[in-house]
Length: 282
Image (tube, rainbow, N blue to C red; front, side, top):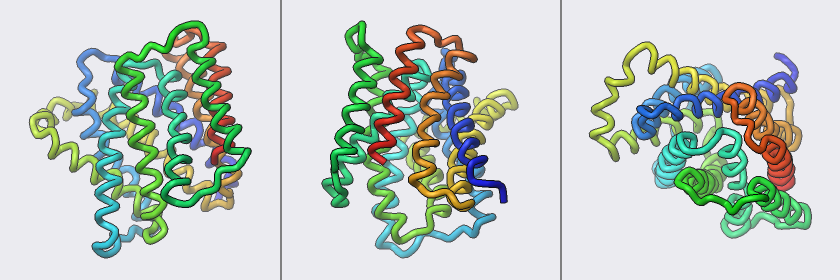
């Protein structure tokens, strides 16, 4: 097996590329976030299920965990939908910075529900993240447009889901959990938006499927390589700060490939600050 450093680098790059691809998909006027989210969830399920089967997939344990699985599924369904909408209305780099602030919510929920400690290091982490948002909007009032609200939705839904996931994974294999938690939100969204589901045929053409397939592959690859790095000997404390670098690379890739160079210096400083903050909270 390759050294864990290679898998960690792959996690950073694939995570950033998936963000860029999503922004390209959603920038198109005709792109339907709801329809794309539904199809994405099922394609992503297929991608990560292959890996889970290879590692030894295990079905969810008895009924006592299913209520929590459904809670996480609802939260991820809402979070994924917000993510697609945020990518439609916000530049990729700005969206990455704002959604990373969800680490603060996760910490607060962890203290309340999991009894996590909150020490001076985490205080500096919170300060660093807040400072990153101030830097991002230093010379202008924060425009609370629809994209920012969706980004806030992503942080809230995903943060609550992560805390719930921690409890689930104590009794369930993490690798098997990933495809389950990709599939269930897709089912929930398909049932919640039946009229959209009936339009899936619009995406069943080579061009549309290739685009959303590429996004799903890179998104899934980011999750898989993260676990591969852990399996190859990396510790969470080693992997966490490296994976946070995806925030910075997303800002750089957005500037290089999407032309999102407006206030680039400020975005880079903000990305570094939020990366440091998330690491300190980890």
